[in-house]
Length: 575
View (cartoon, helix red, strand yellow):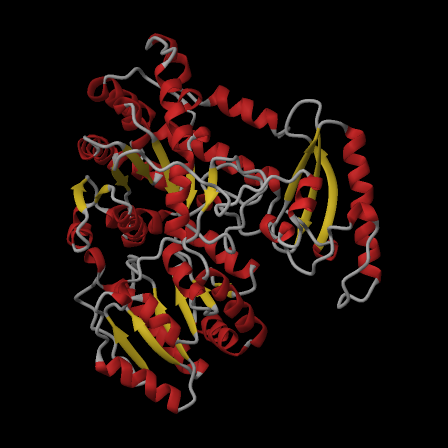
């Protein structure tokens, strides 16, 4: 990674990650923090002095001119944050050899394809946005000649089977968990108390049905929130991969998506959120999981140390332009790009009235915004609808409204009459984002990863009103990237101002358009399949490790509590 010196906001020293090491932190415009670990204080101090001098020189010069820098910092010469690929793109093969750089991009790799077609099981739980990327990945794997099964909740069966993908049902009502998260907030005391009280039975059923759904698999790819995949793969002795739409692996660059603070708190805090989440999550399910492992899978009890979750090959189905790969990610963690399904290409016939509405808005020279919060359960849907109407009218824009928040999982209150919509708002039940978004000027949504990816790919300035989970994280990302606004609270005053901002701010509009162009160049599914082939041998090597040296059940009795593991992690951080 190359960090241009004029994009450096601050540089300072810090304790190293390991005993006897010294750390250095660079705070830049595009990443909250980049951490370097040196095996000696002298080397760290030399780097600190060089960077401070270069930054001072840059600040004294005209910021519109790329500064000339000395030989020590000659690579800090570009006016934007560069990726590794950017940094070597202008170098000749001879120069690459001279610098000692080894090319390791997807294009340069020639991973070995499996000798025979494999049976993949893709295991995921949650809402529609948690299933959609797996349908896209399944289609890509099937084109490669593999057979694929998706295991998820019953309500998604018709959608999955429409694409000719095998389906296996697992337990759970995603709407009930969604209500709990919205009512209490993620990992609050009230949330944990209700989850322990009401979801014990569901977890037992989820684990049991997941085990049944994965029978006959050669490979398991799981969203780790599904909880059971790593244990099932161990019992079956097959390769196991993880994939997620939000930060889930330890890094100093971003906080855990479920523990995103209101203000940035630095790399040590970010790393600690993963340690705390892992321990808290495991503490909540460990007794049930270990009972299930013993009674159903024929395995010994386990703990965080033995599971080795941090060693599992991991895919992030997000654009690297949105989730910039941190420098402290391990080699087996990959940001592949979004796995878009593109349902607008599947013989979608738009309603004629919707087409007329868009055409009339263009003829009237009015900006058009999309407003929709997916399948979110809202306690008072009528009040939200009224606020949306007043905000749209105050901003002077036209709106395509997807009002699903009053229909899902019994959220609709029949005692409250539906709010009548004015002529400048057109309501749709649904429409493929890849068809609709390119025809609009801005988007407002809840900040789910899939919807965020769709609006950013279309080049739309994006307003995110987060409700729970990763939505807060992606709200902060669109603001950090300068392509949108995060509204923690939605009322007529701040919402109308935000609508005006995203439809008139030329700087934001240009940044969103440029980001959309970058995302449209990516092929996330193809990159993911390349990564799977590349990491297959490594994933197989973990099977052997998991089956060697099994300890007795009794030796784990004192390790069910994560306290000692947590303390070791925090001690390593000097916290």
